Image (cartoon, rainbow, N blue to C red):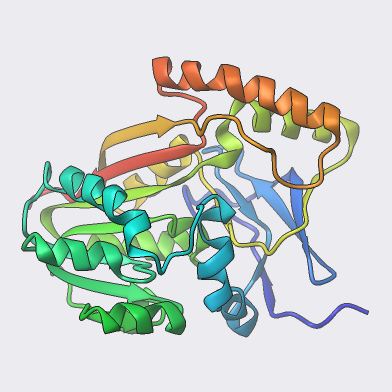
Length: 303
């Protein structure tokens, strides 16, 4: 007998506001419960139509998540290792400084706090928001100003930041539209929302797999916690930003090179995915399409 979980049902698209979602041939299976996915026919937004909420959602982000599962388990280390992320954070800060140097920086989902620590060393005025009390406690030990809880709990003043950063976070939040709207309000005129994260179902292999499973009447089943409540595509991100009053000024896709395919796949499935992913890499590099990672920068208009 499966345990009782706190969940809610999503019936409409939060990216563009469309009133109906179509079934998507994908679902999570976790703790004896199914979390099916749906797709918006207008903006290509994909999302779980049954989502964990409340204590069930909070339980997914214990200290163990930051040691093992954060970034979908693709990181070779845990989030508490400063040396593992110093070079990556330096590159991010260099990118931030092409838009604004040494201004007021907010990181939503700051995890262990290393990026904000390194930003402060460069002269940024830094603030963090982190849902996990375990990760926030680590960030506070670094001297970072961190608000524990959801973004709405932090009660930050409007127009207080020159740059808001979210890295591998927006796909996890309970309401992506509400979060994006709050980000827009927190930005000063001319400020930038810098987003980095997965767009996994956007690749050739995943798009083909979803179509084949739909034709066969089956479903891709992921036997893991339903961390990604939202499966973005570049189109849905543009629609979402437009809906909250931000203008996309950069949308850069990338493709992770093929490696060992996750999940419970047969040998033939793994070989086909590896072949498609190998061909996907140069196509993404050449045409900025069909990636599984994205960097998006959106600007708040002046005036």
